Length: 198
Length: 243
Image (spheres, rainbow over the protein chains, first blue to last red):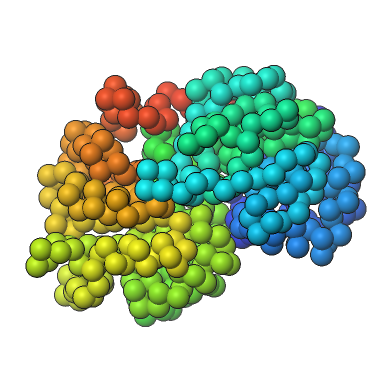
C-alpha cells in the first residue's frame, strides 16, 4: 500500500504527538499548508487545538477552506478538527467549513462537571463505520475539549459528559473524532490505522 | 536519560492515564535548558503527558509543546507574573495550561507556598489558596494540580478536607497531589473530594502500588475509569510501512 498522508497546519503548537502516533504505525506524515500537497495526499488529517475562530482564520488565509470541502480522499478531523467540519460553533459564533450540518455548543460548566472535559471517557457505538472497526462499546479514549456536537445523523459513536455528544462522525469521505486518537493508547492507534486503511 | 524512556514505557503499558514530568533540572536562573528529552518521551507515549518546571515564558511553553508535550504546568512563574496564565491560555488554549499550586494549612486557613523545590527558600506567599484557585480559573487555567504540602511525603492519604473545599469552587479539572500511600487513599480522594485525577509519584516508582491492581480496586469500588486491560489491539499487529 502506498500511503502519503499529510497533516494540515491548522494552527496550534502541538502536532508532534500526531506525527509520532503515525510514525509508530510506520507512516511519515508531513505538516503542510500547501493546497497542492493536500490535494495530492492519500489521506488528509485535520487536527486542531485552540479556538474555532483562530483555526478558520488560518485556513481562510491559506486558501484551504474550499480545498478541504472538495477533497475526495479520506479526511480525518481530530478534536477541534471535528468541529471545523460542521457548519459552525458557538465559540465566538465561528462559521466553520460546513461539510456536515450542525453547530458545536459549549459544555455547561460547574464544579460537578468541570470544563474542559479533560480525561478518558467511554465510547458507545451507534453505527458501523470503517473508522471504528474493532472498537467496542466501553473502549476508552482521551478527550480534551470545551465544545462538542450533539448526537445527530452523522454520529457513529457517542460519549457522555453531562449530555450525550458525538465522539465519532462520518459524512462520506469525511471522518472525525472528538477524542485524540494520538493520545488514546491502543484504541487510538487502532482508529488511526483504520483510517489509513480506508 | 534512558531511565525516563523506560519509566514512560512502563507506565504506558501499566495503564496510567497521564504522566506528569517535573523537570527539576530546569534552571531557576533562566539559562537555556536541553529539553530534547520531551521529544523522545513523545515518541514512545501514546497517552497524554504534561511537563512542569522551568516554563517561564511563552517561548518556553511553545518549545515544550512543539516537542510533543500535551500540556505545560506552571507554578512559581504564575505567582510572580499571574498574567502569564492569560498569555498562555490565549496563545495555546486553556486545555494546555495547568497551574500547579503548593498549599499548606496555616493559621486555620490554607496558604499558597512558593519556591517549594528548595527547602531553604520555600515560603508562604500570603495568598490564600482559595483566592488563588479562583484567580487562576478567571485567568484561563484549564486544570489545577493542588499539592497539599502537609500531606506530601507522609503517605497518610490525600488532604480530603482541603481538597473538598477547593473542589467546591473549582470548575476546571482538579488533580489531587500529595499523601498517597495506599490504595484506599485513592478511593477516598475520588469518592469524598470528587477530584478528577489523583497524582502520585513515590508509590508508583517504588512499585509499592501497581497501577493495574489499583485500577481494578477502584473500579470495584464503582469509580469510573479506564480499565487497566482496556489497551485495545497492539499497534504492531498492523504496521503500515509506506513504500
